[in-house]
Length: 487
Image 1: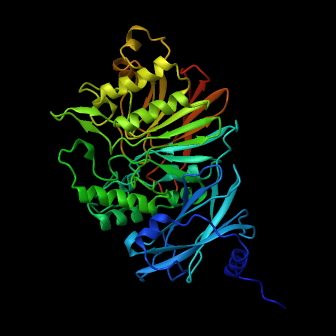
Image 2 (image 1 turned 60 degrees about the horizontal axis):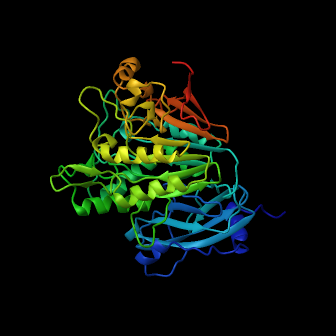
């Protein structure tokens, strides 16, 4: 009686008949001189996929090996058993890029699930799942999720475990994917993060620590994601240059982020993050970078948060968009919440001219359905936006220029305040919760946008996640209705 084929034999046989991928990882080829080959190593940090389009996806993993150079084979299939293989390629790696593996595979079918794994001489990685986006002319409903501020020491990433179980088209990380500073266990911190990251080696180690969280690994394994960074990927509030991190530290942080995140490099701009992703005719997603391009005048006064080039790119993109919903992935809060000491200078509140210009352009052009999804603040909020926020005091019924959904924090503590007191000082605020941790779901369709806030028990490694706020925003109104789903 013939013995059953092993999983490795099935994968190898399927890969042998597959078409080879046509897009090798150019970033790795520049750093590695040896020819790509399948070498020794293990996959101890999971798998991930990202920056999908209708026909292509970027795939990621990390090969742990003692050898200075090695490589692994990526196999992509239409089925979870990896029998219907559509592409395979051998990807080189080595110490110079921390053993990370990246390849972008094209020629895929729109709005389709694909399964993938990596193979070395020593083992086969877990099987990952990803999804391509809808074609450009599609009006299919879209389901996104977003989160920010995941401090490893402050809790378990239970929101990610819940998001992994959802039916998502795309997951959006809004910044503070890591925290650079060390934190030891205390009564309110269930696990230690005893490492300060200031150089390439320590930033790489930090990502390895964060990826050890089961919820985060599962989210990356099952859903494609896009990422924008905020300050803690380098240093807290580093954009204020007070004091400035060294050029070497900043370069090390950016490099580690690109190594560990499933995204490719722009050929002429190595660390560019801002870009536009179209999800058919339903959503245009604008990813911002509010750290690299901030400017000050000769006296050190803050002038631009996006820089002129990115600002004009965003304005032109919003005006030219034909998508039903224009969703802006925004690191720091744009609404000017003031608790008595003025808006945070590290947010858009420190750049009021930039804010007035952007929101003024949206108002004057009459751009419909502009939505900001925001991180950084560690609280759940919903804010109405206008070029002149004071008009909400004199005319509470005025139509806003846009709406901001602030999706809380995964684990980082927030400012727990009484909602009515927040709104008394900030009449554009329509919801505030600084006690809970979690993430947000966003469902976009032709008639409406539905945003749901979900809270998690992040102090329990098996903690549950439940919805607690839901907002329904009808097309063309910029006036969401609110449904509180329980304490």
